[in-house]
Length: 357
Image (spheres, rainbow, N blue to C red):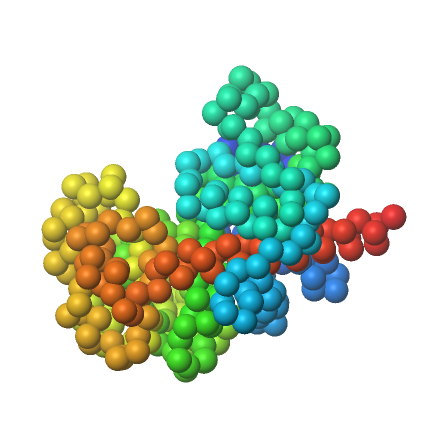
């Protein structure tokens, strides 16, 4: 099978076949084409598949929409913008934080929420994914929130299976985690003392396998951040990462010096003790976010982490719970961002369907 994904072959490829393509090829193809299915002709969002393909104004519109769900005291408010609509959460791989915050966001918008038990679904009994999705669509679904281990899953659904359902990407393979990326952008927007264009941001950890890092880097670049730094063991850095416009550091102390934001990434347990990573103690020694390293950053620097955290491996407890940590604010901001993309996608999907009649 070829490593390219073209318009003729994509209609016949199975979703699971996406995992067979070279990851870099998938990501380049997806990034180049994501704007087509997820935007209407007027630039409004119809699906939310990735931050790639969206311009600065569109990302700012998502942030502004998310801001509208906070009251004057910074508390989240309910607004029934999805009342009468049905959202189905389709999580083909485990998640607690993302699925829960999506469900909270959906209910705050007044939607009918259905969590589909994938482990007991018909796809486990031999039914094709296409047939499963078409049957769910027939149950008057309006939005699918999709998380899948295969890069391109949400894109595949939006273009080839259920284009008239608003598709929200809750994470696909190593490719993207766009709502996590945007909640990080909202957190920086709300908490950083300087605008994006003036910030220096350090991302520490498993860049190679992190869909969060991919989405964050893309969003930061689009929003005008000129100084994006990454630091990780060489075994956890993608080859040629410099082409994404980031500065690569081998020494973490140098990486975080004078930074405005330090973003840690989760190290998956299966990497520890493998050829990729000798031990958790060794990782913490060289790449752990410690009080001493935070002190090298600017005095008002933010500390962020997408969770779940491995305390004592990626980050010291005193830092995670410290005054500069905005980790819990990220969780709260995640609800607002997910409310925003759900609402905007449904609005754009309605406009698309009206224009098609």
